[in-house]
Length: 352
Image (cartoon, rainbow, N blue to C red; front, side):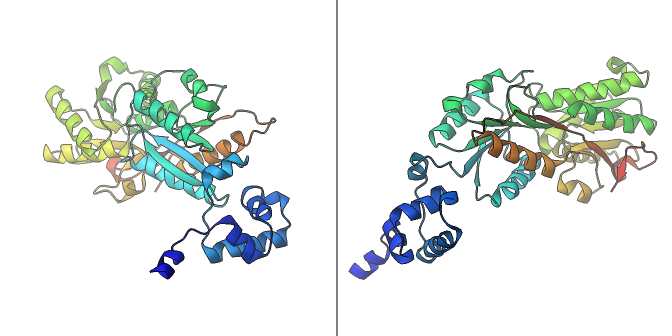
């Protein structure tokens, strides 16, 4: 029994130092400040760490002045394929620098979001990538995060006082509706999420702008439907609402999951896509091209968005006096598939 218990005893810093034949200070510096240790010595210490299975105490590391290797990621909905694809992109971006991502779900609630930021600050994470739940035009509330927690806003334009990476949602809404107008459709529905979600509000603005550019009054030709959620069932519910008020010629959905739900609702009601009603989604998640009827969608550059956001956070949290907050806005792209029948396309259109 004694031998079994001994084998389960935690490996300590001095055990690594003994195996590597160095001081405990050298082991500590290899873990926390590797730039202070000769490369050959670092290799010896790292080999000893791997051989013994030593796991550094993160809180102890931070007390020595080392940066945490944990990055918080707070999203609006962990069931959203868009945010999961973004999380994978972020994880890939930070892997080489030996950072890990802690994923949290605010469920679109400001109180929950604030609680998560406090908890992450208490855990002394390096910083947080945040998809904000606020509907506000400015992001002043995020300048008051606890303990000066470094924050980079994800999929949200937050002004010049914070770093942010977002996609031009107004341009995306305009692309979607312009495509449908080019196909000859005039009466178009927009299915969006809760009105307090800024991304959907901006996509609706782009849809209205495309209508006006075509000489059509959006109050007459654009039917706007808001649903409480972002998933397939919500898209189906939106179609039920449209059935009560007269069906449009085409439907533009604020994300692909809503579009999948709208498709199901249309089929249940006896409509065919695209023969009876054209359908456009948003995000171009991986499954969009493999849907029953491959979905035309507005592609967000998710990999680039995640990579840039992670890069900005690591730079911002390094306490570099030369760091300047950057606000990166990426362009969306229209990807045409069979759900709009490919009967026409704009010059900027990409076929997939």
